[in-house]
Length: 355
Image (cartoon, rainbow, N blue to C red; front, side, top):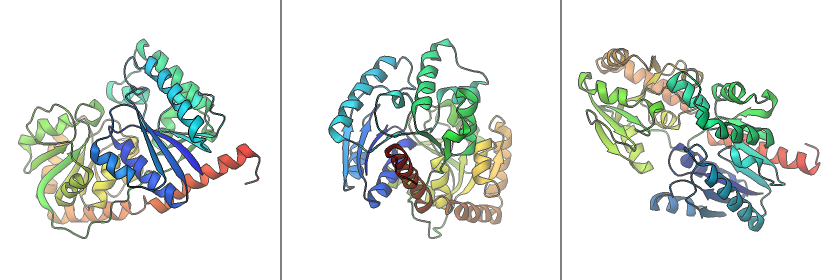
């Protein structure tokens, strides 16, 4: 099977793509990964190109969710069609929406990692302005054109249905997964860790930066952005460095206002962190019973909850074990297997082969 996949290197989509490509190659696939937005770092590029049966095509085209990206979306669409004409893929896997409406002539899977409209409602409590009308049309057209849309949670599936009226029988929920090896019980250190794009209001990391002086432990935040620096900011870490921080952290905090899945949460759970998460639908869906939940708009409640856990090592250890146990449900064997079966069934359906 030959798969043309799109991705960007700016966030969790990159980690998701690399891990899924590794799994697809194990099944015998040949993959071309076409990137848009910020180019991969040298470390990202080296990791990807260490995989057999992978071709990387890079570009600088703006991503569809960036303001004023319409011209770049059209130009990148032409570029992708040219790549496909040379690669001759059996299936198109898009980690975005707009390009699904291109005349591929091949099965198309769209994976809904997030979207501007659901992001905006979660952060601002209303729909975005008219300047995003073209974006919504492109997303809607893409969702109507694709063979199937995949979401990492039922919560994100509901957002697609609400914002774009996607028919439920054209949406499949497949959990994200991680290949991070389970922690061997490394001794935890007295600090609170968070990770994400500091500039992204949906991550709500400003809450931890603001409340850090009132917490009993140091707060460390890994990610890109311009912080106020009450917490200790680690900047953008290589994946191995981030995992080292997670294995050491006593508490992992994630105060997001919007989170379709939360790959960083899964990785922290695999590292046996005690999870303190936003009380939002998606995180409840994935981590109910394995984390402590706090209203993301109540800073004082985060101070109280984290300080209470700081003074209760038995509770931290209990929830670290629960998080670790839950993380083992989100595996490559399950999720990548579901993707492979989905790819095969769509290709067979297009070619008229009985399932």
